[in-house]
Image (cartoon, rainbow, N blue to C red; front, side, top):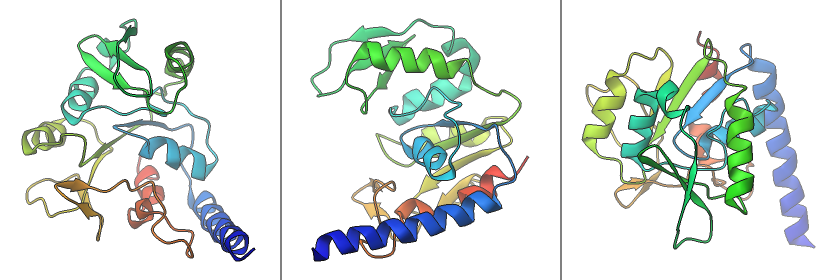
Length: 205
């Protein structure tokens, strides 16, 4: 009974936080090209349509940088299913691997990829890289140099000279950032991701 009350309390707090963020959001019809599930969580919390193919999947950091460096080229490739030792499907998109971690099958993942690819708004693109999944300094440097106006690199440590880096305090987990989609506390309704003001980021045009 106490557990259910705590869960309900957290839902109420999360609802209020999301309502506040949705009221603050001025920019809509947004395409978030994210390295992992952070983008999907942001879409969900803000009540926005999934106008991006990078939902419910993740890239290794090096592959993500390659993907966003030549975005339109990679989006022309047909996805090809590959064998995976994981309990989720994986696919090749050209020479990069998509880890479709929140899909039950390759067919489902491919259908969603194709559907959402058609909804990309190239006039309103936002890029989110995350300091995990094999991320190295050279990947960060390449991402930082990309000519995209709206990009952010979420990290757990200080990066001098990296203009797009945003440090989220208390998120270190070994040599990478923790899963920031997880709840920071059972009682506040806040995720670690809330340490980054993504509404302010998305309102920049």
